[in-house]
Length: 527
Image (cartoon, rainbow, N blue to C red; front, side, top):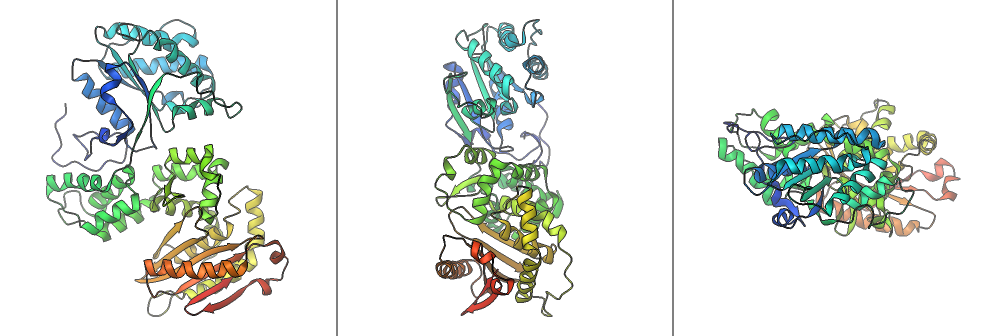
């Protein structure tokens, strides 16, 4: 084993290993798994969790642990090379070659490639492999299983089930783990391309457990950074640790990314300067602007209709009693995009909230001209009244045309007002200041907190629909925005922006639709 480095680092690319990286035992975050039973009782099982939460790190770590003893032989095998290949005659030889490759890398006996029909190839090579490692039982840890699709997935599962009954030393793997983002029933549904209802009994009814890998708890975040403190004495303030957990909700990649940027980019890697809240805030901004692969991969999926059907009501705050029952919602949970927060479907963490909003408004931002009017006051604060007055003019000139284009592209039309206002604000600020966003299904609004040069400005967005009472929406909004302001920045300027989406109002002139009024200390904008 390679000697541990003098100074390790926080890893954001690929599996972690304790020689190079600060890391916590991933098996401690397994929920619903019984590792001690899987070998002893010859069980097949499923592990699913979002990307970059530590699945591969766990599998490789467990493989090394098993192989260091005398109980069994284990091998990690990724089937990612078979992604997008539905034709079994092409995918099964590739999968068999993957088995041979990973066996060689792990310095284990390498099975010969059988000359046999693809529908029996996996069954045959696993049987031959079991013979080679006897008298020890064989454990196979299949990773990236959810990339398999259609005929390939069905054949893969059927061949495993076919060998299950005869599993044993020298016959067939005694334990197999199927690992990916989704649970087994979702593999089967996806393989049938939604054309047939899944049958839980076919083609794979032999799994013992469906385990998950949870996010870090707050104490995990503390213990992770404590490893760096032990190595070079660098401390981190309690406020900075709290902010890391609050922004990440314990998502492992985000936690590591914030720590990595703070200790290797904002500060020098060898630095012993205490990491502060300001360092982590800068790390957060860097991470978002860099459009890291992890974040970009999630954002790209926002274009999918089934993802949009979940994200859009979360953006607008609409209530949908059937939202959480849908397969699309379960997919978003498996992707790690959403969570249930205080009883409502919500974006999984504040970092994802920011990334989603920026991704969905990026094109609109580029289409908005650089402002020629003064939006900053002499004292360095924002002239928010002027900004929102200019937005009303912009809404009046462009809303109908831009919304029709969004509909033609099957975009987020229900959230169009929210997205356009955020795009306008982001374009004007142009990287200065920051916007805190709160939105969740069932909240009935979107809250924005804008911080600029130490000053806070509170904006709440609400919609009036054909079935709403305008007066009730107004009164509800005033109560909500004052509550949000009291929590975030008491006494800050507050603006309630109400978009009237009723059919009859759209027939009115713009002079009738645009308004600006006050209720004590809250400005009320009609759009």
